[in-house]
Length: 285
Image (cartoon, rainbow, N blue to C red; front, side, top):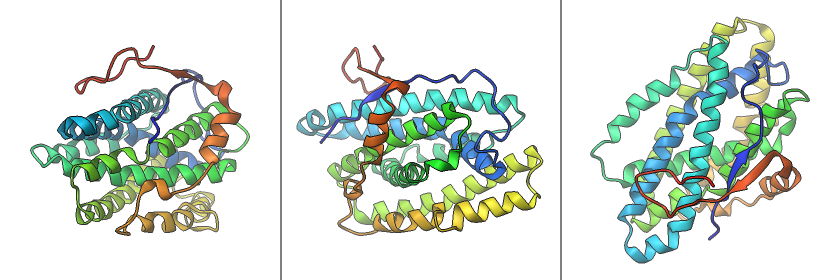
């Protein structure tokens, strides 16, 4: 078991963005903007679910998972902060984040549930984000040759999602979460993800004035359903989750390791200055 490494990203998130920052493509820009809008709320939910699950483990298993959970929390807290800064740039362009607040209201429905339910939802989301991350790392040309700082943000995030893809899954298993729970939540997460992502993307395009342009829909068809499209390239890995003997570690890829090694000047590794506390974030040194 390896512990995820917390990294501080060294990019400018204060300078304004071009409206179509992703290779000049309105659809891709709107889609990635929509994903970012969901992250601050989603990352906090994942942190809470994993920390709560960790607290329920017996002492020997807490010792086993402590470093991994601390790395997971540190990475997710950093993602939440970075995408919060990015989302502020989007707000200044006149985009309205409706996904984040709607998700926050929906997630309140977990209050009072068995802790394994939010953990199962987190494990499903983490697999979903891992296969999405792998797709981005496979298709780095999506981002074009401009706005390298934003490309760096997405690929750094993708690498860390690959690193901690097993944490929630393993804690759920340690708490006795069943295969039935796991696949039930993956079905729900899949429906909600696509419904929310596409709805927010369409809203972004409408506000952008690009919704009814032919090239917008052509790009959507190519990048979602084409040979290298998101749906076609992630369907197989998504389906693997429903196998009873599935584990996220079975997804073999060195793409994230290669990117981190080749882009070491884009981030600095940080440590934690204090032991893991279940009710607060680790403090970066």
